[in-house]
Length: 386
Image (cartoon, rainbow, N blue to C red):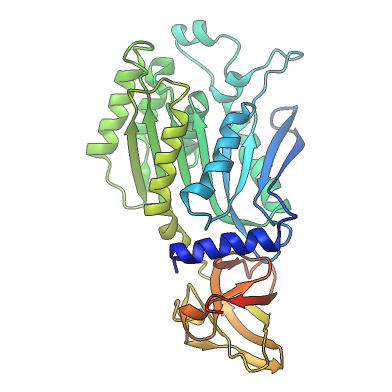
């Protein structure tokens, strides 16, 4: 159930007053990569009051090129403003810094083995390790995040320039690794249009779930990097006119007034606006086939409170605020035992949306993964109509 703007403002004000001592946190974590045989540092942003919101799980953005903090910081900052502070995500910054000792740089991570003389002459020894970097991301970083943080299933990859090319190459290698791919000003032309050719010849039937692919360009190919435009036109034409796949939504934006560097903010804004308006709810409706036992308990304010639970599946009443009543177990405790599919989203009410409950340490809809644990406890702090 989508909140109206008044509810959003109430949540924002209440959360700021109640938990003012907590701030969003950015951690720097070092991982020794077996795939790269290097130590790498990643950045991990957790939203405000992550430590208090112990029953909540979060989708994850993976931002490449985050050795340039602009990309990571802009992504972690803009989401709140685009969603009226109603959605929270974990943001992981994947870095590709230059290693002077190894004489190893960003392009080594992002480019595959090159075949044409022009590309080899241009990139030289700074290329060719993209497969190992893909293994680092898929078998080391993502499992580390899933093991150490409360994550949901949706993963969104964001890249710019050659890291956008890497994002697209990852889509080609395994279109189901991420749920969403945001490629801002990718180089589609390197190595005699290798990436462009792979995209138009990919077997798109391999896509198993609703997937979002975003592409953008700035003024590349107009005054500089002339080879970029034919490759880009080939890919855009394919997605606009040829490809038919119910599981893939493609959005393309062009920013000819922007240059290659400063196209990142307007491109990301457009990409995420489209994502939140057209993709997010669709993907959030994807539930596990299996049901899991869950016990949900809530402490109430008054002895006479009758509490209902309502959420995103049949056993939670499908967002009907007065369909599933919780059981009174004591004066100030209500409980219900359910079989739930994952991830389960729900709220508490006193029988209508005007009496939706405000909870200690939780904002908006509660999202849980009943396959991870079976008992969940909450405290009601207030009701919106009080």
